[in-house]
Image (cartoon, rainbow, N blue to C red):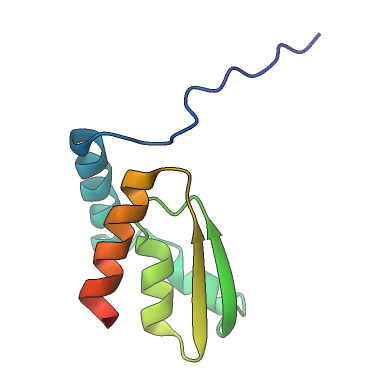
Length: 95
């Protein structure tokens, strides 16, 4: 018999401190070139509309946008705090 999953949260990662730490960790992954951006592009995802599910602070999708042309990105994230931080990054780059 399989036990039913008990959701930890229906709000995702929340709280200023935790979101800040998650953002720092994600930024390090980007800076250390550990994101799969180049592999995504090599796989042929080089244009059009992409949907990123659970992007957190958005580093992978935003890096993909910077490296491609004629592209649009839609992010689907449960955490309002993560959405806020991703929007700030987007404004700093393109707006």
